[in-house]
Length: 66
Image (tube, rainbow, N blue to C red):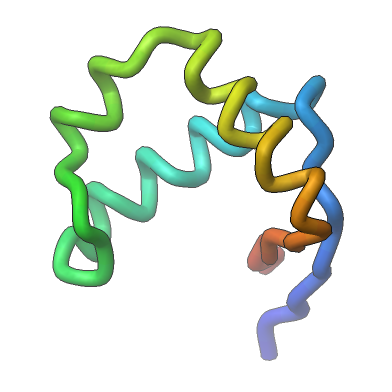
């Protein structure tokens, strides 16, 4: 059985978030309102900015570990 770990992603982990999001967009595009191509074209500062905004809302992101 897979283990799920819930962690808070702070802005200095934006590269992990970007990688996870892009992977999810490739594997399950129907689950998102944007496309892989749109997301991949975003500048790095936008990925970090997104996590800065989310951090203020106290949201959490899940990572699936095998």
